[in-house]
Every structure is written in structure tokens, then in C-alpha cells.
Image (cartoon, rainbow, N blue to C red; front, side):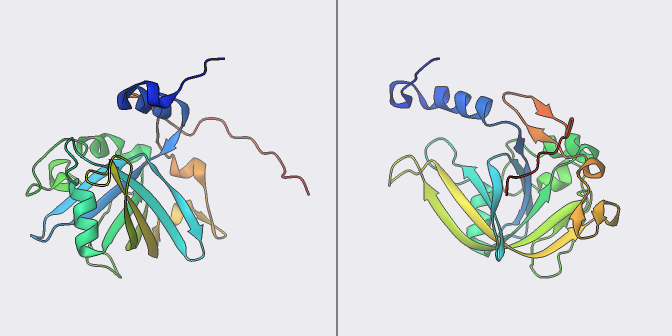
Length: 204
């Protein structure tokens, strides 16, 4: 068994161990609206549930080299709103196109050929191709890591104010994961499909 001190190696080396170990990771496809009205979008695999009471999700947006905020973090903090979409097989190729490094005045949604759809409770549009999307109000934006002067990331905690779910996925209040066909992130350029499922009863 290897024993590795993270302080003895580079940030990139630690990153490789993290993304290779914590797998598979769900992918949040996040849309935000800039102050100029541009609909930005990007995928993030540092993503999970925070709590169900009230429903909250967290997305960690890594900063650019030099500590500059990415469009998603900047727009979400300024507007106080964003939309989280669950990644699935049906639009994963288009989603991947939105990961390109484009100027803030260009919309990744338009570049990828995706369809914007109005939200019900917030001003930020979502993407129609996603079979599950969640309208979120920004609960907190927390700069973390790096140094106080130059954080490494911004942790966006969003309170879900509206769920939009394809009826074909919805069964008695639950989501049919096989029908959703979610896509998760591995390391490098690798992704994973749902794969085999099994059940284990939790002990009483």
C-alpha cells in the first residue's frame, strides 16, 4: 500500500489521484446568465447533493490560472441564480462541446446547438435537451482552497426551487435511473454509463 503525503507533490499530481479515485462522479451541466444577457453553460464533475431539507446541491467551480473566476461562478454570484442539469447519454456530445474555453460574450449553448428553455421561478434559462433540470437560487458562494488572496475554487450551493423531470423517468415519486441513462465522469477524457445495478438492504 502506497502512502503519499499530498504536501510533497504538485497540485496536478494530487488532482490526478482525486479524479482517478473518486469515480464515477455525476456531472452537473450548469447554465448561468451574464449581466450582458449571454447564456453561458459548462459541465462540472465536482458536484453532489447537500441536503433535502430544503433541497440543495453543490457545484465546485475551479478557478482559472491566476485565480480569476470562471463565467459560471461569476454569473451565479452576480445574479444569484443558476440551473443544474443532469447529464445523460442523449446529449453528452453536445455537453462536451460546452467545455471549450470560449469568451464570456459567446454562448456555449448556441455553440453546441442546444435549445434554451425559459425557467419558471428564476431568470436563467435551462436547456431543453436535458431530461432533468433544477432551477436553483444561490444559497452561498464560498471561495475555498489556494490562498486567501487567490482561492482555488468557488463552491456554489444552490437551493432548488423547481424540478423539471421528463415524465418517462418519473415513477411514483422516484427517478428511473435505467431510463435516465446518466453519464458520469472518470479521469482524463473518460466517461462511464450507468452499468450494472445491485441492491443491499441497510441493516436495522
